[in-house]
Amino acid sequence: MLYPGSAKPLYEQLKDILKQKITAGEFKPGEALPGERQLMETYAVSRVTVRQAIAELVTEGLLYRQHGKGTFVAPQRIERPLARLLGVAEELTLEGLEVEIEVIKTGLQKATPEACQELQLTENEPVFCVTRLITAAHQPLLLDASYFPPAIGQVLQNTDFSRDLIYTQLELYGYKISNGRQRISTSRASREEARHLQCRAGSPVLVVKRTTYVEGGLPIDYSRAIYRGDRYEYHVDLQRHPLSLENKPLELENKKVKQANRKPVFMRPRR
Image (cartoon, rainbow, N blue to C red; front, side, top):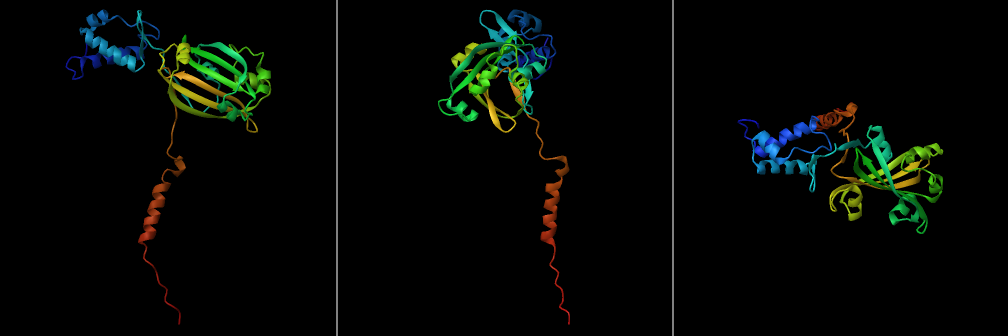
């Protein structure tokens, strides 16, 4: 039964109930949602109501459809802060997620203009490229292409990129990774990206471009990662100003007002 006496439309009530069951773990990621007829009988609603509620949950990314198979609970969205410099697989592993890495290609190739600029290479200098598909909770999450200067490529050429974490491997060779610069934008998946990420071409994706530096400011890695927009998000904690300065703007303003209202004082000349 839905909520008796509620002013909410029936499809919104059903959507709220299904969302609550997903959040509580009663419907687990990857599980099939009960069929339309079962939901109609359980909650005494029409097929139109069921379909509208499910469509809303698909739009919100809580459910996904597979043609000919049904509707399934989507994997939990992965949320990451922006404050730490971690490799793409490293950050997921630290979250305790089951990560699988598929190496799509490795080797020397002609650098893109953007990679040349970020790695401070000459125009015709090759780069060592590693392209990997990262899967979390048995679902494709991101497609990552990392570009390294040729000297770094020689160091990494015997690395098993399906098992070893690249930052960790570089640090084992003595490189002291210090900082990075990252840019995040939105885009739509190309046909090739959609094929790897198992989503539709044109689906929203997050594009994360990062340049990583070692001590001394030398760039050693430029990467471009494409994340499924329905499975990943970043969060940033913001402060207006430090607590010690919380009342400073108001104090300064009051001080200016007092000075403006102060009457001039004239000293009489001595005789």
